[in-house]
Length: 509
Image 1: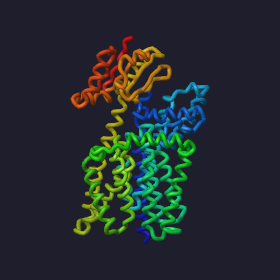
Image 2: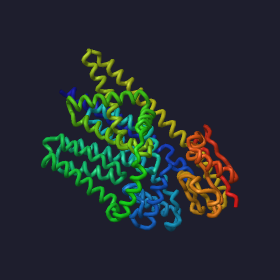
Image 3: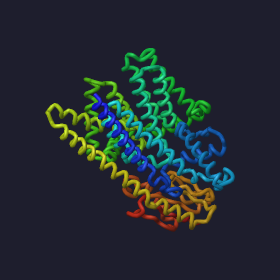
Image 4: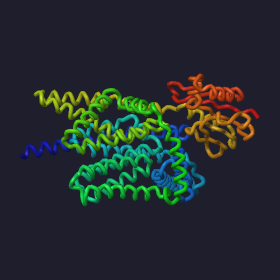
């Protein structure tokens, strides 16, 4: 008896040490090169969050004033982080008033907040994986720690990594509600869903998790229907508290949401194929095949048992969420992030449970352990190298950063500049405007408006130049712009300087 207790304690210590190593590795990958691109080459949508958060800090108003692309919670988180950063800077003598601080002064701390939530998500995946067992939990959290898509997006002030954190928190809370089906635990699960929805609207789909638990847990108190209603009420209440201007400025929210829905609503037939490619490229082939095995195993367990609920929670939400994002017209790899923790758990389940089935064939334990080790290396090594490669790549000065530095050094302050990428944001001393595409206006209009310089990015015009026969009008418009302006400098991508081709054009008076 004493020997067994010693072995169990030893196993616990080894698991704790392994988890600590995983968390440290996750933090290193997410904090490595965290300052890359600041201030000249930001993430494509980072300024949408940071500029509004800094404005809220300056004005003291939590009202997003018509900007409801995001519900608001992460704007408030970033506002709080920016306030702390300002106080620390003021103590250090960096500035004496709010108007002396610029938005670019807050990006590093804002990114750090995202990286912290990304690292904590790895810990939550471990907590979820414990419902299957310690080996499952360690393997799932290790895969989450090195997942290239999650590592990459943890470097930016965006809502997708925080959304993934709250969805994973909702999953962990749903499991807790199943294990102790009290009203308090269903409130906690619903509250986590409310925080997810207040971070990004698709987070509301996580309400499936506590509803499934309520429906599949007969002892739920006071009843299964009541437990589901309690979770829904908690989710709604927390959402309204965390994103208060969705009802305090109801007309603004409804108008903003309707505009956003119109952008996303057009169905895309090929989106699901693109998302499958994103998953495969980030998981790589060994983990992708094993994840498919985990999905098959989950389907069998949901149909036959045992532990139907556990497998249903791991399977239903990612299927519904994948279907939801695949029907939208805008396709970005980061939109898949909320299903990545589920994919990690299913991959770990395929490895550990699959190898465990070999017991039926009297295969020695040492051989089974060796097989698990081989599969673990095959699953973890390619994503790890991918994530390290990304961090090394962003540590190089890319073309957008080169263009930013050249503009600041060579173009006079107060010049009127139009830029067709959101990644380049000039200091406030410039009269700069960021547009979706330069071709939205013609040269006479730019001349009339007093625009002196244009900045073109191949991230935008490149698609028209790669296949001009598919977009002849757009191609011709860009050719006219390039033909009627003077190209001052061009930054082309190379091994040392990755990124899009950037052209700085001078508009002739």
